[in-house]
Image 1 (tube, rainbow, N blue to C red):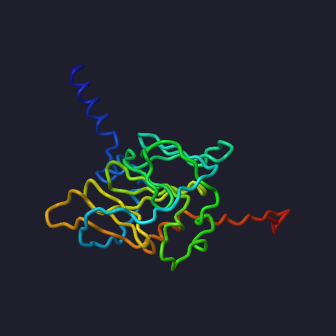
Image 2 (spheres, rainbow, N blue to C red):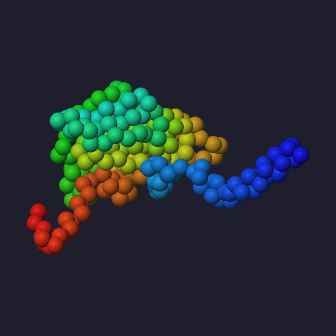
Image 3 (cartoon, helix red, strand yellow):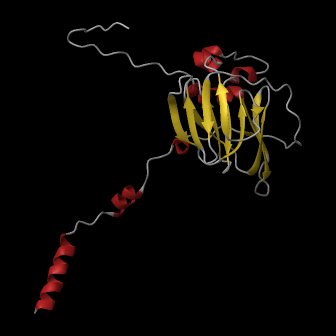
Length: 231
């Protein structure tokens, strides 16, 4: 009798335990979308493959009091001249290659670098010359990082402590070139019949780069004692 009572009690407890429906169970296991997972594809244009060549007229590297720390595991930290941390984030993967400004290659994909506070993008899109023959000088003050999965090119703007992730075309062993009028990507390994080289004009990247500029502050709300607050 005692054994039968135990079976009945166990069955009653199991029936009383709420069961999650399949959708709810899947939702409980899902995670918030990461910043690079929210990035929409770019309009890369396939073009005939050409052997690698030297990039003409690479602009000079900038300097400044903003400090960027990038570790080998992809941890990113941006600090100001006082040492105050303005941004701490992670990359989609470990850094594989890195460039600064308008395409100046860095000797190592991780390290510590200084950046200016007065880059063109600190003025928003108004600080850029849209019709310039060489757009690269207007990319001063940016850090570009290719991660080891080669799926994204992360762009960091230390002056505003903002980051965007640019989805790259498919392929492995990617070669990235900063040309006067466009950003070019070539792959060393692709599926049979797939393009090996793509590009996108700098103008096509401006909507993404605009997110690196300063964001307008929300207006101050009034109170009963000060219905029209002053700046």
